[in-house]
Length: 429
Image 1 (spheres, one colour):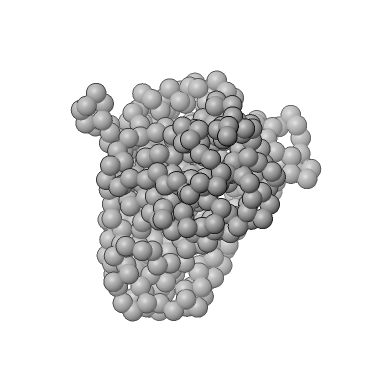
Image 2 (cartoon, rainbow, N blue to C red; image 1 turned 90 degrees about the horizontal axis):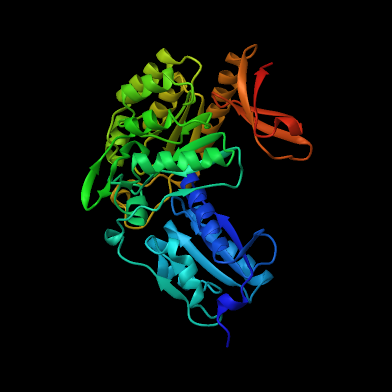
């Protein structure tokens, strides 16, 4: 029988989860295209389907299983490869899903081409995984699905042990690229016509840890942003997400004075109650968070600030949730990403009592999403009458196109080809 690789022509990808996963999927796609694959749409027919999974919430696990079932109905003879965080955490659970041929853990995902060469449809599911403690190399990745904005991975893994989080178990210890390598990638992207780079990582502010010639490398995220600011051809950078305790005052001041780093921060809060923050094992109190927001607004009154928040964490009382609600209501932030707490295996939060009923969690989520809508509306209205720079994306969506101002206000307007991947002065009205 000829090997699978001799027959294979097409591969399709689906990404669940964060910007980091999108950057890695794009890199996996380029690796397989170098091996002779032709990339095709996930909703169509393909010889290989690759699902890059997340495992932050229970929904991501369920969605992975649903996608495999859909492929089974549509293309039962196709190969199905599962990688990403869910694949590292629960490889045997995934291997038991009917139709899955290959499960690649954190150390093996970038060796996907070599693994496909040895696969034969109908064999038992192959699991390629190792203990997460053994995962210590950094693989650079960036997305190129859209020339306008690219997600550039500069850091991976996390040394924090928040009580609700599985990411250290799925991605290993904190490690990162070097400043020199990241700058080189930025030059490559600039040469390819990319205008905006979104810096991504698991714990971005922890950038700098790694090995160089067998020795520990000691660089900082502040040094990285300074170096990237000098790269010709890139007009814009965004910092995807940064922990409040790692967002130094010098980084805030640098962004305020930079022409390239956009006035836009996304800073996880998770709870506005200090008691819940302690149970979550977060490394700050809400007072520090408020100080960071105040300093950003002092330097950049126009700056957009996004917030991650979790509702329904074990033992969160009505009063503690109200604390979070009131804290966010008073805080000068622009929008919220609201997550409903879901139980994750092998996390310390499972030992915390009492458990918040699921219907209460959903009610709290709804309240904060409503607050987020009001916050975003208020932030947008503050800037009406101003002229701000908008980078329009290269997509014609039913006669419309989208772009974002420097401070992350979304603009939708009738499609104009001459505005694709261009920065346009836009009067907000």
